[in-house]
Image (cartoon, rainbow, N blue to C red; front, side, top):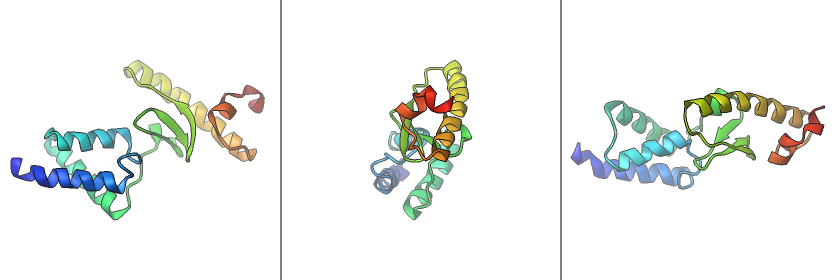
Length: 134
């Protein structure tokens, strides 16, 4: 396994370069890259890392939707985006907060879609403005 490490580090660098220093990676994918560099990959982690590497260098990597809600993504500092617009910030502390935020994300996506239908750019301010939804 040690013989693979220089290759893993080089692959991690390639992933980071292909994803704007990791800014375009899902937080779980960024953690996977970190684990690879720190020699902490399980066999399954190696398979997932190899697939991530292939996707990144081929330009086919797609950040997964947050909670599988189309158009919602989250970055590694907690900014939630609707398409490319920051519309919320989430911090995950435990399973209870994840469950609560999942419910909130459904409402958030609904509000963002309504804003777009009204030709209003989704933003934190617009999403929080209840008068736009009455």
